[in-house]
Image (cartoon, rainbow, N blue to C red; front, side, top):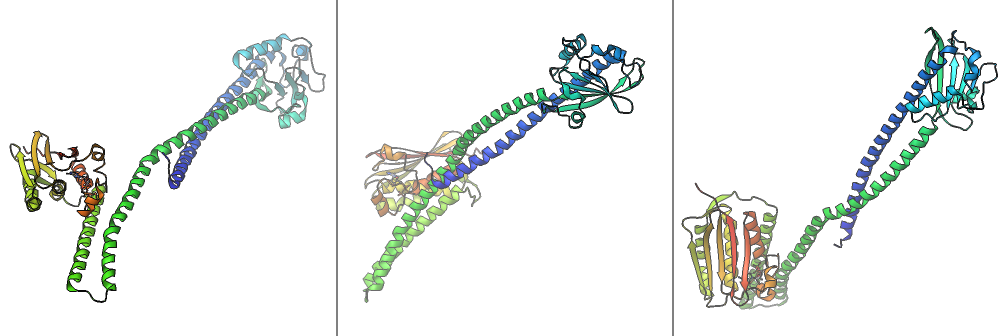
Length: 456
Ligand code: ADP
């Protein structure tokens, strides 16, 4: 559907709002997922460090006989151990202690491949020794490292302190473990990139869906706007004709210096006729607009359809006789048929159909109004004529506003093409249906079905 600029703009705005709001929700959701992942990995990391502290304490306890002192006789068992003011112990081959430690940690933590810097602090908090895992991690002895927790490769470390005990369960001092965040950083970078990719994809999909949804949402609004525009244009066009006729007559009368009484009379009659047409048109427009807004200007009453139809027949009998037509009422019901509604409106709907029937039936023809009670829950009103009929193509349009099959003929009779639109609006307001069956040259049958009021 091609749309006009204001609708395109509204659609763009609506889509932008949808996308914006959905993007915010998606971003907030992704951020929450990211924080949960970070939290879980962080807990994992700290649990690993705690396990490392437990394992180390268990393994080191034979070397920790005196508080704040390490038994150096077993130092070579710990490659990477650097005791203060002593050369560091090192070994070219993997030592059983470290291998076992790694194996134990591997079982406990998937992040066990990280680098560790471990410091042993005595009870006064002074460093006694450092331990590097792996042995090549030379940063551990540097004071700068322990200040900034960053090694020579600029890797970040996370540190925690754990109490250390001697073999006799006395306090030995503190074990300070710093663990590299490299693996965690790489893992989180992977998570960030994956989430970002998914987020961008989701936003793109949301954007596309929003554009489509905004189009769907705008469609009925645009259709109703177009109908309104068409209605306004048609109404203005219809109103212009009688106004132009009145102005032309009045101006002609004003221009001529002397008018005979017959001319004055003719002018006034034209003005009166056009004013009536104007007033009828405005009244029709008002009725339609009230029906459209579903304004209950009258309270609903119980209407006896037989009486209502008799009234209509009485009203049009004189006109039918003048047009040399037979106007008949056929009540084919067992008893009275009641509906709940607005009698004036229902009267108007049937009157419009009868008026059309008379208007479009040549002299000598017949217009019949029938009331039937075919089903217990609904009443049927049929207005049949033996007139000119309506072509199949026109039948689908005659209920449209301002639609006239023969414009000249309708205009001549003062019709603006609103009569059947009003009938349809009234019937729909009474939860009924109206349809037409017709054959050109043989006549038409308009059928109204209304839900009946079941009087118990
Ligand atoms: P109008 O007030 O101009 O008659 P309506 O809405 O009542 O407008 O009718 C729309 C058109 O339907 C008319 O212009 C006419 O051509 C056609 N029409 C309505 N009723 C009949 C009928 N009984 N027989 C033939 N044509 C009809």
